[in-house]
Length: 135
Image (tube, rainbow, N blue to C red; front, top):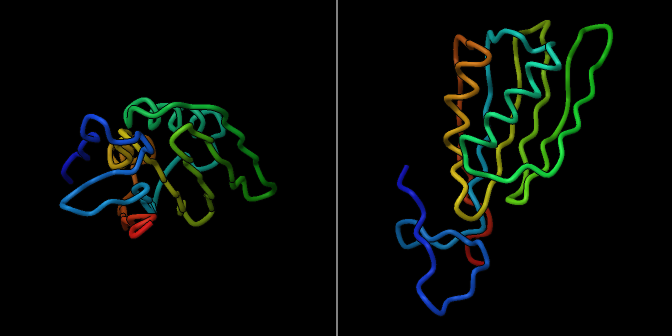
């Protein structure tokens, strides 16, 4: 994935991204982790979200995580100045669904390797949506 380009001098800084001749609001990664570990570990998930934010060069505003019983699943969100990272985990199935949406200079794709190292999934699937094309 190529890095986004900065606006030319005099252009407004609206945090839209310009890549390959396409302007868009941000990159939204839909990430599925399969046969993953530590999906019921609240502290580990929070630390991993913080590492994702740091690696992506984003700005953390707030994290809220909620554990569910009896399966130990966790749902939550890291609210960013550049948008958000969310997680919903099903530890009994070894599955987690994450959304990583960032605008501006942040690099959401850097979160994929952080997640791979943190949760050791047997398989990871990533889809990218370019939000706001044509706005």
